[in-house]
Length: 114
Image (cartoon, rainbow, N blue to C red; front, side):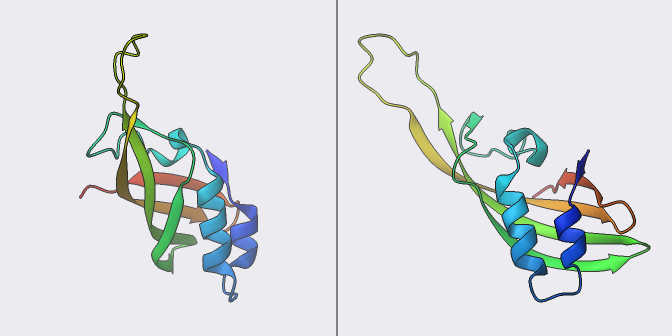
């Protein structure tokens, strides 16, 4: 479980979306479930993750956020010494729901089905 204390502190301020976007972009592939969100490749890359906040609302002590995440995936080759083909990168996109507990900042991240 992750704790987004800075995001909770930014709730109901003009910097909420930007703070959340920055936090998402610093998370790792496993936390964001990016491997499971692949559609064109077979391995999610951890670099160059970009987030877009689609919507957010407050319900029952939880801030619910829907976010889109742009990232890259690769299809690795056989990596033979004489294999001339480099790793091919493919653009990937998935949508996530983040549920942020307003008391503890404990955050659950869930991959949304497309």
